[in-house]
Image 1 (cartoon, helix red, strand yellow):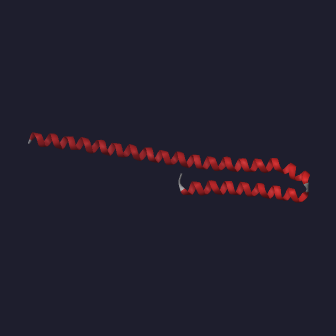
Image 2 (cartoon, one colour):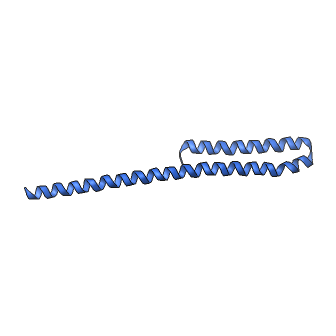
Image 3 (tube, rainbow, N blue to C red):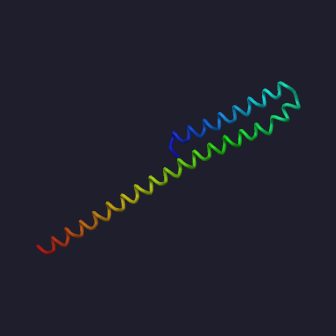
Length: 96
């Protein structure tokens, strides 16, 4: 995964957790009942942030793998071309 995607994913997770912590903190200040009511939305915030971060990382991983595959295909083409040209040079040398 590239650094930019990792930073973005970490930021999304961090912001989601901070929002959830703030929600719980505010609810705690208002009393036990409010705190209990806030736990579910806070947990939902954490899960959504984590899911979004995972999506960012998965997309970056997929793009990275695609680039690796493209580079390998290009390398294979170059190797095949060089091999064919080398074989042609050998054939030409044999004819002389």
